Image (cartoon, rainbow, N blue to C red):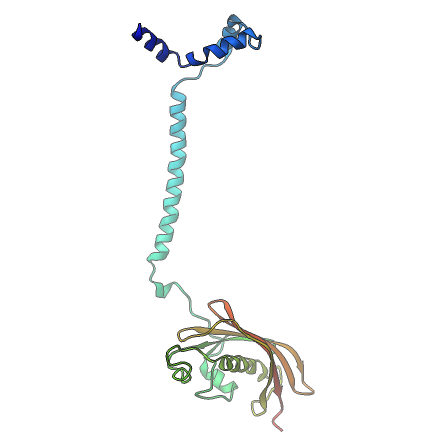
Length: 239
């Protein structure tokens, strides 16, 4: 008896739902068994092997995705295999230090512009200052925590403005060029030894009659603004 009951329950997985099925028939919600069997016979039969083949098709898609991911990872591995000293391009050189010295009257230890990387005549200039521990202001500012003084960042930006102003397009004179004023200056982050200070100066307004120029400047380290402000320059003809 036990074996018979076990075989009946195992061979028919829908046996547990037979009571619900009978109640549904009594309520008239389903067709009689003969009509039901005809309908079921008219339906297409599904082979048991289909789910397995479907799994195989899914696994093949996963395999293609895996191959794609592996190829992408291979490209990333090629990038990481390149030595770090070859991954990053250097700043371009529009004006080197010798050309800068021909424009600016400043000399050591107060020449704070190392290279011009972009220049639009009479409009703007972008230059860099390589901040190193060998700069003469670090022993006193500060011995235990070398930070570039904010006033020197302003001076460096003013010198970049001088590169814009002391050009034939503007009519400035190297013998009569002064830093006249600053406004709305903000220091966002400290600049330390090892940083590269990237400074952009834009000419906003020029009054040649009075020899006054208004400029806007921003300084960046790693793409983040560390200093910004408005600058007033005074120029002359050297007379």
